[in-house]
Length: 166
Ligand SMILES: Nc1nc2c(c(=O)[nH]1)N[C@H]1C(S)=C(S)[C@@H](COP(=O)(O)O)O[C@H]1N2
Ligand SMILES: [Mo]
Image 1 (cartoon, rainbow, N blue to C red):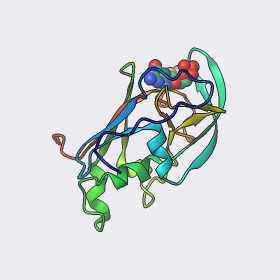
Image 2: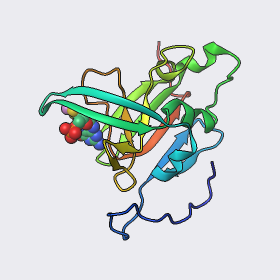
Image 3: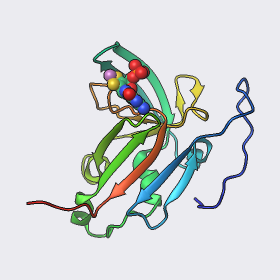
Image 4: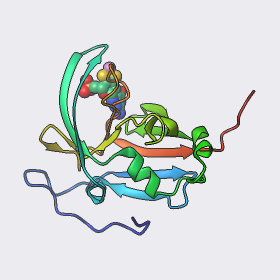
């Protein structure tokens, strides 16, 4: 992973060659904040999920998704906890924002292999369509409702230093 400007990539066949490839910003308590395009997400092991979820307005939907685990991508950005101390990571939040401002918060413990082990994806393909132009989509195979399947992700903030209130 690199923070330097990313090279121009060829458009997938059938898509217009003009227009930007959207970037996801990884920010917050990270040793290596990053700007990633969808094609950069191919650098991590790819996982597949068949997902059914219910939307309050449009009913049940079924999709196939493909992409890296959210955990793998964020872990490589260097979250600011001591990886040797399991307790240290449990206060970290993951704040995901979509292009239209839709947001959801996950906890680090939810996706951590030592704790919740939720197989959350940063999807780069939905069904047979690449998401290079739309931006990656959050996929939570364990969710009954669709509302956390945030599309067009623009930013993910990892936060371990928000104010704790008793
Ligand atoms: N960026 C963004 N992603 C979003 C939403 C949204 O409003 N904005 N709505 C969510 C909801 S409520 C559902 S059910 C799923 C599926 O939405 P769709 O019916 O638009 O595919 O997307 C989720 N992802
Ligand atoms: Mo929904």
